[in-house]
Image (cartoon, rainbow, N blue to C red):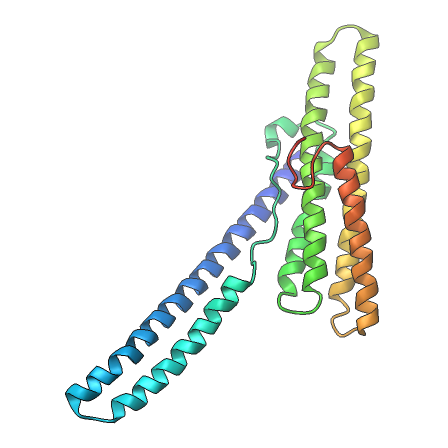
Length: 243
């Protein structure tokens, strides 16, 4: 399969995965909200029902409803306190047609495939000790993919300009610029491979001693710093938008 098609497949797969997860989270949050409201209303209505029915059993029901409302509210608070949404690239990706025959397709595909794998790892360790460093790795990967997308657009523009320029010397200058951009893209894709390897090692050491987990966390932090440096060189800010 050509790299430009692979890049489009990886991007669409990641976007679909995030949409599915977002829908499931929203449904669970709505269920917790409805349960809290319903059991709170039942607890509030129980004294009136006891007075009308002259039955003390309504107070028992009201107490049980109040406990159930408290449990549902705690579940709802857990949703509110936890940020389920992983960071995602902010820079739009070049279209599949634009990437056709472009040398930028391969490093971009590598970057988007690495980000998709990191997101899957982060989902697999939610609410467990490795979750924080893996989410940190995802944030670094997002910045790298944003940089890759910006650079891919620049490579596409250089390739288009090279085809339009007739003078061989000027065409050579344009192609040299394109080669420099591609070198940066390949280095960014290599850095993302390092992020993915470190995050995978963390996920595989769930039962590891705290010192070992701390060492691996430091590895991810160093890789994230490297990712930030590459993103700046490739023309993106820390928020993943073009400068």
